Length: 311
Image (cartoon, rainbow, N blue to C red; front, side, top):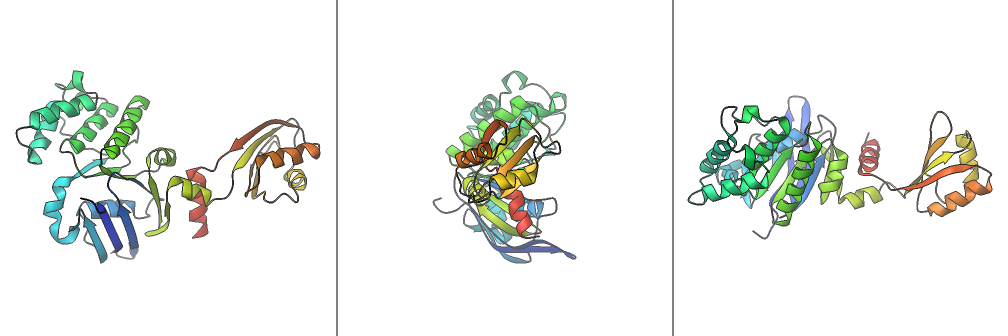
């Protein structure tokens, strides 16, 4: 398929007095990793449930692979894979039995055994293929949950907090897997509170609040919207915010000064001004700087900045 994998136009859903989704637009292209972030109660789970055909929308249209989720989900479902923080594996099935069962459920035929072997190897579960799910560590169970979700080579992979509570090695393995899947054309919808992980993985990020999209763009675009870069300053002697502000008076852009209680460390957020100019002004004012470290805006900075704008 050459068009978008997901197209949501003005989708809305209310639960009693709660407007869970309010005219949300969402597009996911082929091979795109979309990070979908927001506070608890912002509508992330409702969107996920809508994509899985589990929520009837009050308004708007939702299409996956060119088909209407409301009327054609039976044709859409076989092309979806999903991983949740609660993966609900069958405790008494082995790794191989689990993958074989889901390959059968998705209608795989003669190449089923080859694909199961391939997924076991991809997920690093070769030595544990005969172990029951209940005997695996949490990290290995999550690897199995990912394997179950991709055994049928879905066009769209839906991930809800997939990295919660897993070990560093598994985390790194799954990150590499998602990048590889995206390169091969799988579209990925990722909800997570881990903004650093979203920044590392997502090709585009959507920020949601109270059921509405408040910002969307690539991580770089969202971070540029926060303002210029910043600097971390460590002083040899305690200083005040007033002293820093006076030293930078006339420089086009100290946007924000955050000073530690002891007066020895400060973060200065800039607005389109070279960090060298800040260093020169501070030294000229006689402020003894022991450490000067340029900082870039983070996705977390962008996230909170956009939320503050709408509240």
